[in-house]
Image 1: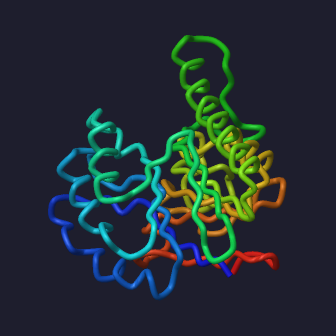
Image 2 (image 1 turned 120 degrees about the vertical axis):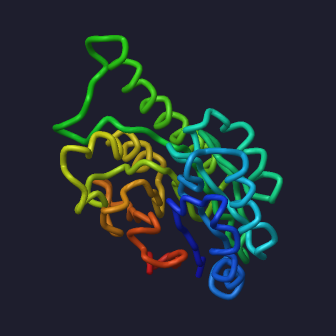
Image 3 (image 1 turned 180 degrees about the vertical axis):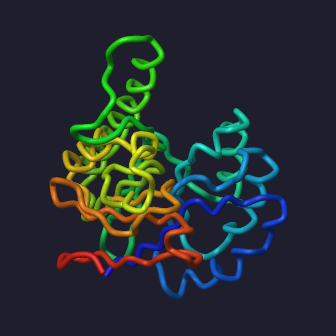
Length: 244
């Protein structure tokens, strides 16, 4: 049984120091690793990232993260990533990592993702350069995620997890205004997830959304934004029989 802890949208600020640490120190008792699904900071500053780093440093389990839109706000993503990596966090963007849990090789592929909408109501690469750039940003993220997932397949991973900030499905957005769905995720991410033979997809971003969803291909999707979970993190169990 693989125990996956996950949370996103913790939006840590300078005044958050120590707020999550007590819960995270319990991780070795309940989980094999922790996934952070973006929006780890409020404004994407190095100072905020250092607070996040302090919350997760040495918690006793591996920590894997993607950045979110808030983490990009101050145009300091390189410095934010470095601060997290200095605390031992693996930060993914169109890349993958593997974790050995018992006798199982678990692969995690990650990307921030981007918006664009979902089947039947999605933006296309047509018209103004600005619209083309918007959709191409999502396509690049999805293509990077798929390549990373394929690498995990080549590595012989027994379980594969997709970690994003933006949602791959509309299911987990239920509760958000439908008008903003195109800014919360894209079906292109779901295509990458389904094509990559994923066992679990985890995302954040949708604060008023719903925890549980599924891709067209049957992959279980979980929205782990902290305002949705209403706790420090959720724990999911992966085994050959499915997800708990």
